[in-house]
Image (cartoon, rainbow over all chains, first blue to last red; front, side, top):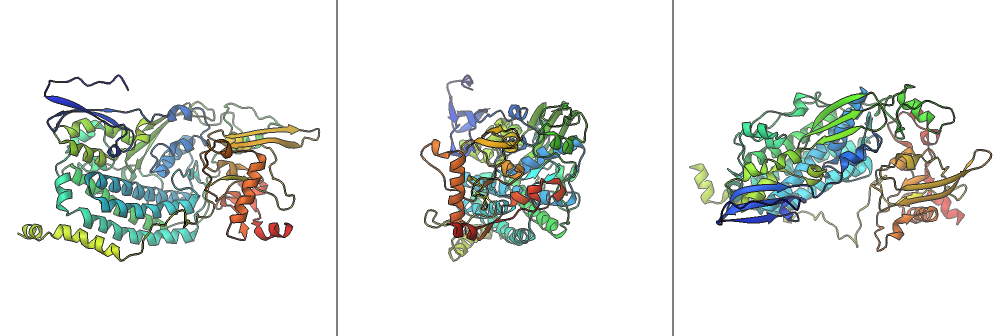
Length: 401
Length: 188
């Protein structure tokens, strides 16, 4: 990190180090910006300040315990991280959660998308200079966090899904509250739009800023709203449905220009679609079990190839989980991805038959999106760099892992 | 023409100002925290406690070490002895609350519902030591919590895990009884 230095092109330019502790960089992102006057000549992102070794830590925990690490990747949408991880392990185990669990997961992941987009809208607008939206968006986000508290007892680091289903059932009363809130939410989104969409200051700050064409976006590997803003129709919820997304109908909002304004519109429309998905799910909520019968127990053993011996304190759990086979998990590799609020969140697992992942790799959308900053910022003003960081929706906990 | 007229008349800005003006007449959503307190929801994962069994007045823990095994941050330290009859006796039970990530796996996995994450959340302190709980302080946490608990009967969601098939769970979790607050008062 410290050895990174920018080479000066000539004496006309000057180098500005933005971050790692800058309120507009949304975490500990450091940007080495080289300016000519007020125009950006070159930008070099410097990541790694929040590295905690999540992937390595995952190799030392059982599959169940490693799920709690994924809460801390993208800490404002922890529910989708958990679901991404659980789906990967479920696909490794060839089990599928029961329908009720699938619907609950869809509800909570869409609520997470709402809360993540609300936080994005709040901070993005605050960076550009609109403070009212910040206050309004946090009002609704608080409500969503309260629903999480009602569902699982935690607000931010939820650890709510579980391999093979979810941990707790949701009460009908809570579902009703969520349903009623979604009607309010749709009105609130109109409010945000009323504040921003037609606002002349907002338009002049966002239109034509950070333009990225569809080809460039695909080359850089952008996903999520950052890609859809450029008009590429790619949404894993639609193209490789997981959970209950194949049973609900929704649209994928697409942009045309690929600038900050289009990405803003995309996310706003996505918030509406999320509310509608939640409503559909609650209407069609099936009754029944929430955990697959072959799902691993919480206290699954971590040593592989364990012989069953009477008197062993873990034997009952072992039988219950591994179905009297010698291997605890099936061997193999799996990559599974979901549509997290920020983009494609992929989990790659290698299993060697033991109760711990041999390798756990996270394909984090934020990390890929950071690589787009140099291209998008080129030729823009210093103030636009802030807008571009905001529009990419970066969370450093996920980028550095 | 229409857009030019809109621009001249500041329609776009006035539209936003109308929304902010409406908000003036609505009730505030914020609270003044230390004076007013937000009530936490059922089964909130807060400070740790050992459930004081109303019948024995002691903790319920049977030293099975399942919680220490499943804990992702490995913040539970247990020591126990086994006597000739095979009965385990708890010697040491310590939780480093500053390492804890409040995932609730310990209370979910506990077969006798001994450990619980209470709804008590104001335990920030100036010393690290005061958030390192041993057996006695865990029991004290429970006493503090049940005294401040609003309802009459306390039953944590993680004690019976709604929605999961009963035959999957250990016997103690299939139909646990709530802990009544009145009983404790009568004993005192």
